Length: 77
Image 1 (tube, rainbow, N blue to C red):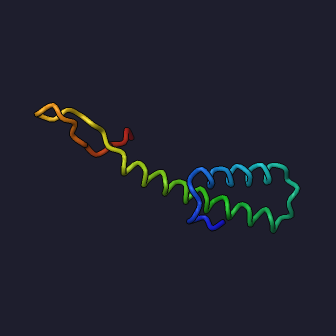
Image 2 (image 1 turned 90 degrees about the vertical axis):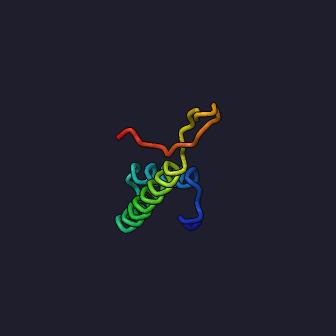
């Protein structure tokens, strides 16, 4: 499955599988390097998905007329 087509959950599942496989230490070096490269690409893709999700999050507060008003999410960094 192409990484750009994977959901966040699918990416995390695949990343966990890669970690388990690398932790076993049974894969040849070339396969381990390929798994490592795939894992780093998945981490980058997940980070991008989280950044995009964070940008969509809004806080609601009461406006002057008592109706909810959308405000941009401000991270607590």
